[in-house]
Figure 1 (tube, one colour):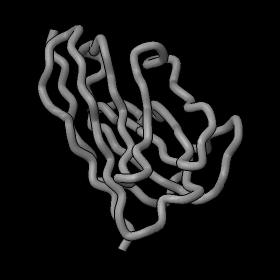
Figure 2 (cartoon, one colour; figure 1 turned 90 degrees about the horizontal axis):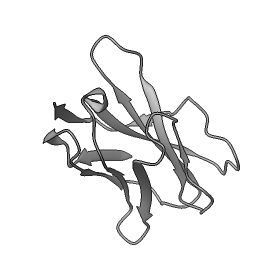
Figure 3 (tube, helix red, strand yellow; figure 1 turned 30 degrees about the vertical axis):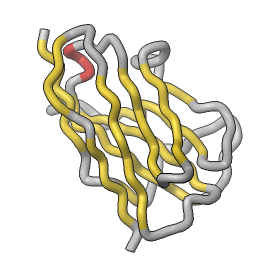
Length: 124
């Protein structure tokens, strides 16, 4: 069974950092695109970052660029999203999602497999 499990969320203060993890299981970690999304109450889902297990340059939303770093540990089948200088507007449930294939210079919006999400709350 394909499974994604996020962890690492929590309550932090403005300016602090968090590192979220997305552990994948049930499939080979080759040639997949992995994205981090977030959704705040009453707001549309936002794609935050994308990275391919096959390499290539990660892509970031403008709202987090310069404050977020997405990385992969292929030995652990785990993807990370580190967020620095967190702001109250970063408060949301963060999800990782995965789709097969190699994407160069683009990151689609549709992903078939999702994790359950992890809550990030940033207090002012």
